[in-house]
Length: 241
Ligand code: PXP
Image (cartoon, rainbow, N blue to C red; front, side):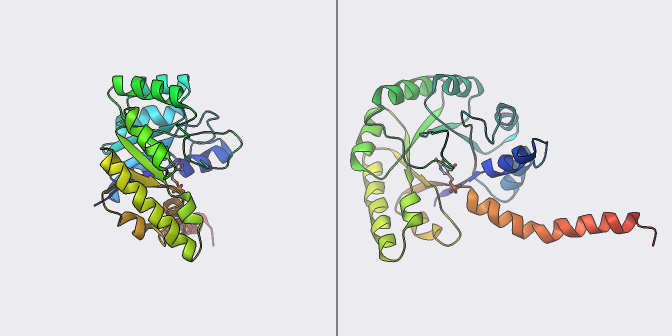
C-alpha cells in the first residue's frame, strides 16, 4: 500500500500572500498527521516564495512522520538540508518563473551536479529521491548515481484527457516496473487529485504519493463553513442588540 506524503506548501503560499503569521504550515503539518499523513512534504524554493527556513527548522523538530524536503541541486540548499537533516530529500528542477515544478529533473544533462548533491545528502544520512519523468534513461541513471528512490512525475497523466490518460498511465506503469527492477523505491506525484489518484495508487509497488494542491484545495471547502460560523459567533457575542 502506498504511503501519503502531504505537501503543505500552499499553506505557506497563503501566509506569504499577506506576509503575516497565518496560516502556519507547522499547524497544517500537525493536522495532516492527525488525519493520517504518512509524511509531510515541503519545497524550500530558492526564491522562498512559500516555505521559509524557519518552517523547515520548526518542522524538523515537530513532525513525527517522515519529513520530505524537496529542493534543487544548488549548493546552499544542499548545505541547509545536510544541516537540518530531513528524513528524505527529493531533488527537483527549479525555474524561478515557473508556477509550479513543471517537469522532471533532467539528470542526463545535469549528471555531475546531481551526482554531487546525492553524495552530499547520503553522507549526511538523508534518503535521496529524484523527481524525474517516466523515462527509461533517466531511471537507469538515477540508479547508477546512487539514489534510493525515484518520484515519477505524474503531471502528464494528470493533464491528459480520455484515451491519452490510459497511454500516460501505461507509461507510468512501465516506468514503475523499471524503477523497481533497478532496485529503487517507487514514488509518484504532481497533479494528483481526488478524481485521478486511484489508478496511480494502484500501480504495482507504489510506495509513496506526494500530494499538495488538491488536498489543500479540498481543505478550504471542508473547513470554510465552520470558519465562518466561528467568526459569526464572535461578532454576535460582541453585538449590543
Ligand atoms: N511532488 C513534487 C516533486 C512536487 O514538486 C510537487 C509540487 O510541489 C508535488 C509532488 C505535489 O504536487 P501537487 O501540488 O500538484 O499535488
